[in-house]
Length: 125
Image 1 (cartoon, one colour):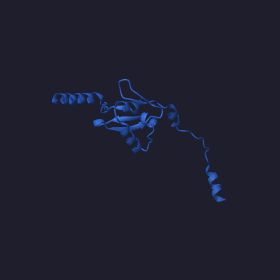
Image 2 (image 1 turned 120 degrees about the vertical axis):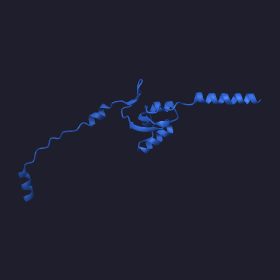
Image 3 (image 1 turned 180 degrees about the vertical axis):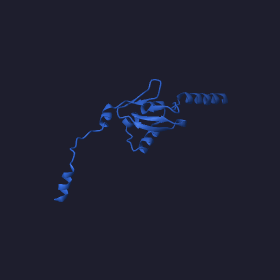
Image 4 (image 1 turned 90 degrees about the horizontal axis):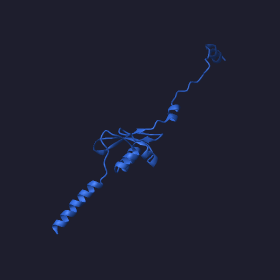
């Protein structure tokens, strides 16, 4: 009977190692959706999002860019407004948001130049 229990313990140990999820690779950059597929990161993702004053809805969980630290810890890099893309053999990255870039272009306002005489007459009367 001892042999059967030993076999069961060995089988359970081997099975649990095969089923265990992979953690992220230290130094790697991951989209939230890929990070969540690799392991049980939902708690870490939500904790980091909250710490950065961001919502914890599925859009922010999946479309955020994360840095993998030592021992499987993660750090939020940014939320990808236009979406997060899985890199082929390199790190994941944010899809370029051309609309957001357009909104960051400085506006040039045409303001008529005021002459010094305009200020003198306004202050006198």
